[in-house]
Image (tube, rainbow, N blue to C red; front, top):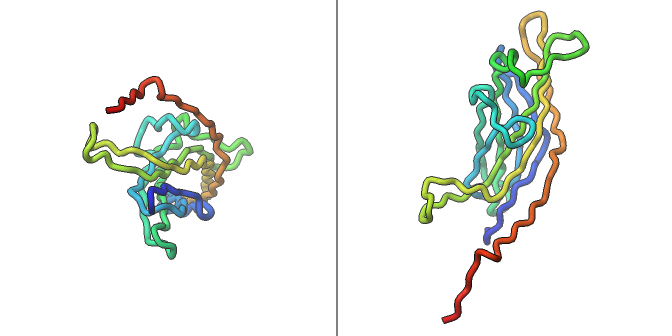
Length: 171
């Protein structure tokens, strides 16, 4: 790996109805073989949802055919029943039964700070952020139908200068 931290989207996001009130979203990635995880935010990609039961996420990986890389999948389970009566849920305007919700999924590669100041802290080194719009249609037989679209997230560059805090001495 030689210090590489690489993660990139590797296919379409899929939505599968898991039960009468749950939908599973799968986001595939190609990444460096590092520790990994995922976080779920509202559509601004910084604010967490006020209930961690709306969305539950996790990552799974398998070795890629390329050395030092993995096929990484972020799975998000969405609880439609809990979301319906919240401010996050948007009802369809065309009179059809259902609605939609936006969420931001951050899949990351991390480093554990085992011997430093915060040994239990996970440090995020690289991430892929996906803004998703999940539409859910309710049918007359009480089943769900789901579609998911990936939207382009806005990337901002921040330049940070710590040079005034660094002191070097020659012995």
